[in-house]
Amino acid sequence: MNLPKPKKINAEKYVAGLSSFKKRTIKIKLSANESALGPSPRARKEFIKVSKNLNRYPDSEGFVLKKTLAKKFKLDPARIILGSGSDQIFELICKVFLKKNDEVVVPEFSFIIYRIYSKIFGAKIKYAKEKKFKISVDNILSKVNRRTKIVFLANPNNPTGTIVSKKELLRLRKKLRSNILLVIDDAYFEYVKDENYLPGMRLFSNSKNVIVTRTFSKIYGLAGLRVGWGYGPKNLIYALNKVKPPFNINRAALFAAAESIKDLKWLKKEINHVNKWSKIFFNNFKELGVETNFSYGNFLLINFNKIKKNSKKIFLELAKSGILVRKMDVYKIKNSLRITIGNDLENKKFISTLKKII
Image 1: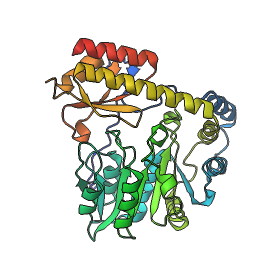
Image 2 (image 1 turned 90 degrees about the horizontal axis):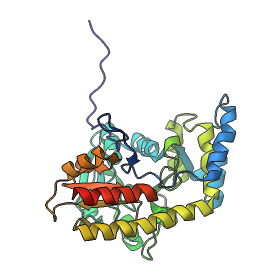
Image 3 (image 1 turned 45 degrees about the vertical axis):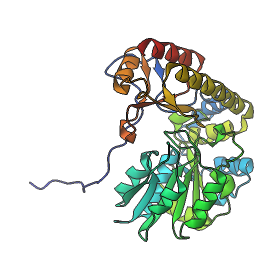
Image 4 (image 1 turned 90 degrees about the vertical axis):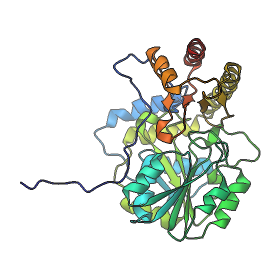
């Protein structure tokens, strides 16, 4: 009997940061770079209010959110695309721009979803070596050839937490062929305070060959609602919207996201919290002899080579204590873990537990 047979997909399955571990009770989750403080009170209130009308379809174009974004960031709403998380926008980009045997360049250690979607749509991945976990523009350019169609990079980078300067980003765009699409993931830009940095949205808002993405899953604390957005040239955004599913963001999520943008007081509270704990984490790791680098995101990457400890064993010991962090195996970063900054109690518990283990 002949049965339906799926086509061969030459891509690995995305492995998310765990929410549970071998039926153990996990009390503290520091594995997915989620917001430490959660959604703003205004977003929660709006979500509950709109949830009373869940029998109604959402606005397929998400006009209320586009209007709010355009006003907040001084953008053209016609050049905004909304996605079920920025992940969906990466998928749409790959669907529209890639065909079999095209090539995509990504930094050596970068968000794995870039390579997964690229492979699904037939492209080959070229990895640009990093220098001490920092993205190298020269190494990206060295991987570009006539088959290159897209360059993806996150700034700040996930999982390393490092940044590319505004000067280097501008140089990258200038050196790339004009028909190569540059995609900049601004997921963590709100956490950065550095005079040499500007988010992609500021640098390339008028570019004809750059798409910048952002998300509500990180600083806005709406990871469970899945809302992301992108900004780019009208013709490219039009092409993405042609293949975007209708009603891809639910009604409550649209309004909660729009309200969260307006809550500047809550946003500042989250930024101050992360800045404070980033320094505390950094200093504690230094005292323990655990290697790390200054991170511009809401997470830190740590390595155990210097103290001759095994990251897998430490991961297991933390999990046994009810604390989940992110293993770096899928990123091919050896003997390392990524730690999301949680709330005060979670952070204190993590530090005290790590000290006992080490």
